[in-house]
Amino acid sequence: MTPVSRLSRLASAALGAVMLAGGALLAPAAQAQPADYSQVEADPAIWHLSDADSDVYIFGTFHILPPSLSWQTDEIRTLLASADTLYLEADVHSPDVQARMQQLVMQYGLNPAGVTLSSQLSDSANATLAELAPTIGFAPAMLEPMRPWLAQVALAVGQMQALGLDPNAGVETSLLALVEGSGTGMGYFETAEQQIGFLAGQPDDVQARAFEQGLQDLAELPDMLDELVTDWATGDVDALETLLNESMRVEAPEAYEVLIVQRNANWIPQIAEIMDGKGTVFIAVGAAHLPGEDGVIHLLRNEGFTVTRQ
Image 1 (cartoon, rainbow, N blue to C red):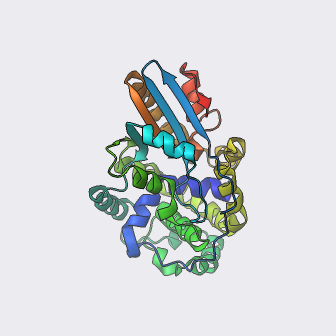
Image 2: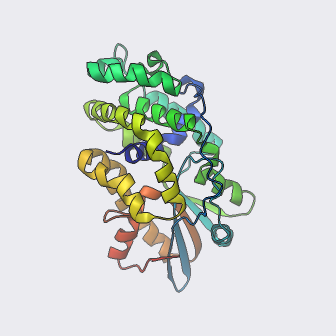
């Protein structure tokens, strides 16, 4: 699995939870000077489906971005301003849900008494972790209480922050700021409990294998991140499908089934229900959910909807 595929899926499902859990889970990462994306001419992909009384726009997001990237095009602002409702994957921003997410992370992200992260890993993986974790801002001992899924997410987020990316520059945070006070309604496809469950519900041995594979991904991430951010910003959907999903299908089929296939399938009837109503809706979900044969766009077309790229 490529680094961006695993890390972006983990960040998609649990970034909010880990970030909001605070200092008990995340070490302060030493930030590198982020790459300058100010010259990128952004045109992220947006999709449209409509009927006599409904317009639905679907936008693939990235949850943590470099602050220098100016991705909010005039088209995005105009479409969002016209929307009666903004739909996101889940509510992980309101204060009540933030508190609940913290509880869920502590409940489902920590090992039972007497079990450590290192006891679930091979000797070679523990050696790699001991070398890699301090470069991201973690002492390996800080990770010992965590189940493999949470340790992997914490390292992924820490690595991206160390590379200069900022959750406050992520798409969802920015979209919420744009609609604040506008009267735009909010909708969600999933709950906070479901989002944590996608990762925490996988067997510990599956989590441990994914964690060991992810250590190599972390080492390679600095060389891959620029390609991912640029491909997303310029709307290169085919490249995103390759980077985010292709190898995941082969190398981590269990995770792919849970994190991509099942979730996408669950969203299709919800989008169909939105289309049964009326008005304008702006949907913003992780970019990896949209392309490919298992993607939301293809699934909607299979259901008979005409979906076009803006």
